[in-house]
Length: 453
Ligand code: TRP
Image (cartoon, rainbow, N blue to C red; front, top):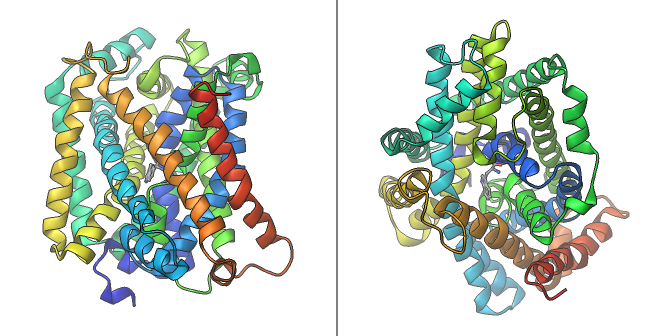
């Protein structure tokens, strides 16, 4: 079955391989770059609690549902929706769900690639010793100079897109699978070492306090939306990425167990990143709400100051780039799989077209940090707008629809068969979460944001 499919994941064939691929997709810039800075912008502890609640009550049930839909149809997201709609005898409008996912993936990748480009550039900066003994002001200077240069950003964005396309065009081979197997645990160890450094800054407890002591007065309805949107973003949910990966999952493997493992690993990485970063923020009188530059303005201080920091800096940014690559391939894969399977494109042609479109779109994000920094649409820069549109709107809407489809449209017998959970409470609990809790939560957060509630 696997061999007849023209997709990148044909090499992944066991449960462990699926966990690796899906964890690779989930763990990325979302955990290490985005989670800390949006936590900083939204006041800390209370935001983290809402995020964790969203992961448990909305994210995990939807991850189970999305994997299940993919595995049942064994096709790309658009065909999955076509096939399962037919199976359930439901309205054809469900097809649009697959479409929205493909578009959301490309939109996300367009800015994801720009930020991954920053991480790539920082590998070089770490290598040439730019951070050596640099104080917070010097590190900020390096960052500001860098993002102020469209030429540099375009160069690194292009490089990252190229790397993504090369992997996707070739398919994921044993080599990458091995690399991920080794790099993921290494990233984890490096984060632990950074947490160790954070303990020596003298502001460790201030950092922990910021992250874990909730002050609910700091929560606005928009920060609740951001927390919920991030739960989707960080778990790669709501646009068909996990659906595509699920379509390569052999039958008979427990979907629920794997979802827990993936969400657990993803959450631990995000929390570790936060624990490593905020003490450095406070120790250097930086501001938690410094925005997307936060990790680039904090971690280099640690690398510049600690023994072995030169090597650690290089390794850290290399791993961040790899973590971003294993995520970016899942952002473009639904589009490529659809072009190949449904439109008869060769894999090469599909990669080139979707890659080129994404690259072009990414220029908007590049310029929003420099020459177009004054261009505001709905009060947001192009980067902020793309981020808001995808993470806060498209993914939750996609997730909402997936929940409704899995909970209400698909026949109970079919989901019960596909999930094959042990007798007892597991299935009814999931069914309750996916039919009521998850969709109602998304709905209420939206009502709040538009001011109805
Ligand atoms: N989860 C990845 C991260 O945290 C980003 C990502 C990959 C993603 N695939 C996705 C986000 C699909 C939403 C949908 O970096």
